[in-house]
Length: 353
Image 1: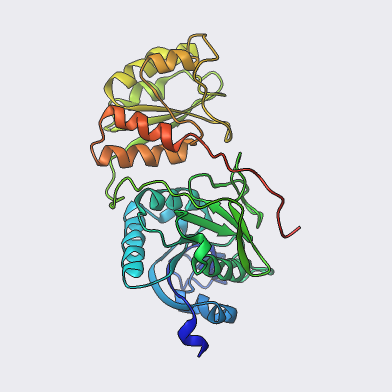
Image 2 (image 1 turned 135 degrees about the horizontal axis):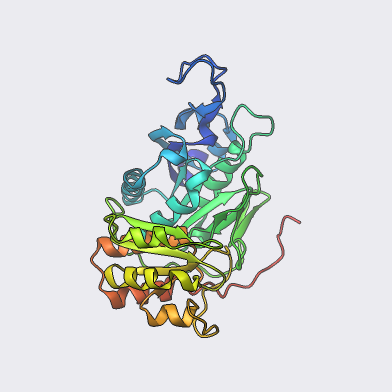
């Protein structure tokens, strides 16, 4: 029978827009009655019931881990999902799907990736339009995610993010729009593949970075500071006394700071590990181009760790995980060098076009 031949996929639900419907202002979600709007209410089983086609793709074992908007997620929630996903594949699941709000997907997916040491696909999805909205994209995204999780060609690729029929690597994906259903992008690399006519298609061989740890919570505090025009450096001066174990600076361009803040950056780097990322959103940090005070040559000489292609959000998570495992300074440099080097994958036309 068909039911005995379908792969098994475990579905872990965390809430978010995909699980949200409008409250109607009744106040029955715990908020004031005069605040109508979409809130997470649908559990994993209700979401699955809304997509009958999933039953023809895989046998899905659904679990509700929490039901919150994604800004309220924390490292403990990611650890809970990581542990549940690991137990699922150890019990025989072909893959795992996690659904959550899109606001933090680029961070939670990368944190999961730093702890995922299995070849089975771990796929994160969500929705840009809540379930009460016309043209809600949650059902299509959930179906596509299950199809990718059940696909043998998705094995050995680490954690994947699937929305709008695009498959992105957790290490490169970013939310690039506040409301578009095509909000997710991987600058510099593009998607790893697509779901075309219901079938996952990949355009590059599978590759997966080794996991750094099997525990992504708790993590030590790491600050993230974005520089800006005429920044006076007072935040950088204060960071060293606020209890942070490390810091990430999103610098100008290829990784630069203003000369007026250079002393604060150097002082901070003598106290805690400091990573230099770029605030631009695409491209690598530089290493040997600019020689002005505050340029990348100056900062590297001061001991800052170049983030390469990793943005500030992902750099913060990688540094926190490395500090949690007491990685020595040379390993911190080596991990950022390896994980921030970008991808050699070539871009190909979208097969849906």
